[in-house]
Amino acid sequence: MLYAGMGLAALVMFALSGQIGKFVGRTVGETTVENYQEGKQEAFLEKGQAMAAAEARKQLPMRIDEITTLQSVLSAGKALIYNYRMSLKKSDLDTNKFIAEMKKTLVHNVCQQKQMKSILNLGGVYKYVYMGADGLIIGEITIALADCSS
Image 1 (cartoon, rainbow, N blue to C red):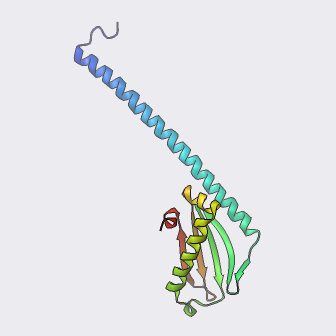
Image 2 (cartoon, rainbow, N blue to C red; image 1 turned 60 degrees about the vertical axis):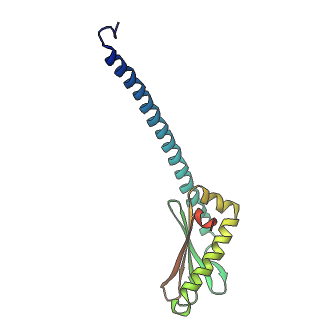
Image 3 (cartoon, helix red, strand yellow; image 1 turned 135 degrees about the vertical axis):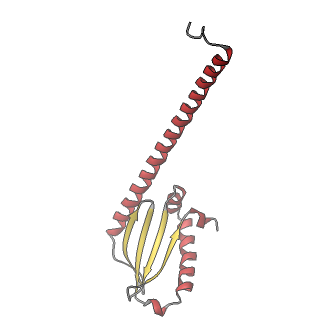
């Protein structure tokens, strides 16, 4: 018998090490599966954002209002990035007020749209970049899931 020459302490240690090994193996296995599933979900999200950007680009440039044109839509990992061009120069605007008002509007719109909210729930983000007629960035707004609860 394999255990015949072992003392009681050695048998206990052998049994414990077997249990510890099972626990470590199970934990590592579960973590590996979770990481794999997270990786698949992240890859799915990134692919979805890339597809959404490609689809949106087919309709660009798009006039939003008399001073705003959506120039491009890009994806970068989990982010979908909207680049807007304003017909006003940065110096023509109170940029802090403009960005604050736009963020309020965008958060409301994104968080109320079921599809956009589901992307946020998966860890996605939306980024809006506004550029003035002078080529200067007026401001950037990033919307994540946490913004929907504020």
